[in-house]
Image (cartoon, rainbow, N blue to C red):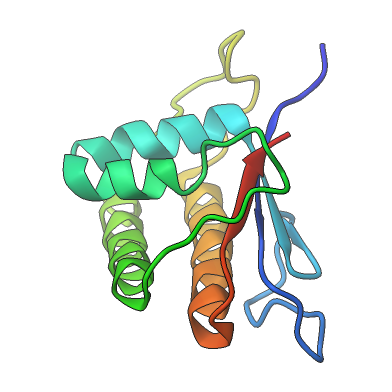
Length: 139
C-alpha cells in the first residue's frame, strides 16, 4: 500500500532552507508528514479549539498541489500561535499514539509529533514573512 503524506511547501527564497532545526519531517523548504499522524494531530487539536483546528485543517486538506491557499497575515499568525499551543499541550500529554495499529503503523513519541508541528510552523512563518500563498496538499 502506498503511503499518503500531508505536504506543506514554503515559498522559495534565496537560501532554499527552512529556517528550523533539522528533522526527518522536512527536505529543503517542504514538509512531509505521514497523513495518519497529521490526522492524529488534528484530532488532538480539536480537543483544544475546534474553530482554530478548522482553520488549520482547511489550510492542509486539498489534494490539488497547484492550489494556492490564501490566508491573511492575521490568519497565518493565528495558525502559528495555535500550533505553539498544540505543541505545549502535546508536550505534557500521554502519547498521541500509544502503540502501533494497522492504521497507524508507527508509535512515534510525542517529541516526534512536536517536531512535525515545528516544521509546519516553520512553513507558516515563511509564508507570512514572504507574503505569498500557502501551498499544502495531500499526496
